[in-house]
Length: 146
Image (tube, rainbow, N blue to C red; front, top):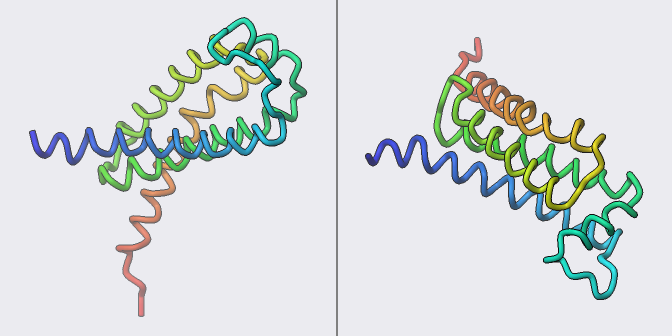
């Protein structure tokens, strides 16, 4: 049980938490550029959809950057902590992020183009993060030839 927690559960949770922190920070920065209107009830999905429909496409740049950076760093950290050679746990992180992204998009009502471009990024970038960490790990233990 201890091995499961240390090698599977902890890397999965840590990767997800890192992705959430990175995405939240970039979306917080975006809120300074495109602040919420006075009196907007963020718990009213219809009011939030109306607000997001008025935003220009540039408002989504930092959100997409957060998704990309969050997924990549989640893939890195998950692979680093688990030590996995195969793309399994990072893939699971990518799937969870994709599912949460779908729920987020349904509730907020992002543009269809943003969904088509953004949602696949979770799987792609967790994979790239995983691959990068595997290469870094391999290079660290490669003989220097000196």
